[in-house]
Length: 145
Image (cartoon, rainbow, N blue to C red):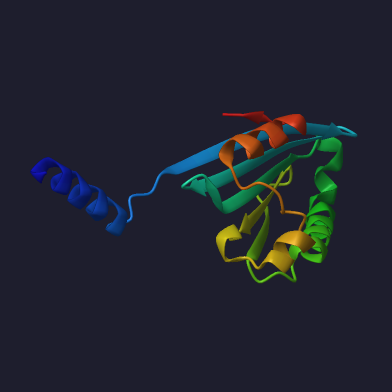
């Protein structure tokens, strides 16, 4: 009986202190078009097998022939991503010209604080489980670790 009470006490303490399991899913995808190379990386943080936050980074590498248009590309990327995600409270976008040949776009999604309407509008509904998200991203051509 004492062992049973001890086990119940330990389990209770673990639950009260918030023992949680965290995992991160990292997936990458290379995209090339018209000589422009892009590497898209998606990082999804899971807490207790539920999506917590997501981050998408797009690194754009311009060939020499497009370097003089780097500012135009930055402007277009800002416009594109702001129109797509800019009106959502729990989405933060940062577009940076690292050099004349590299542009980085970083999009952070505070998924756990999004309303169901935001998730639906951003097409982020579906399973929040690690295994399902991994399978979905791999089905979209990403390589996941």
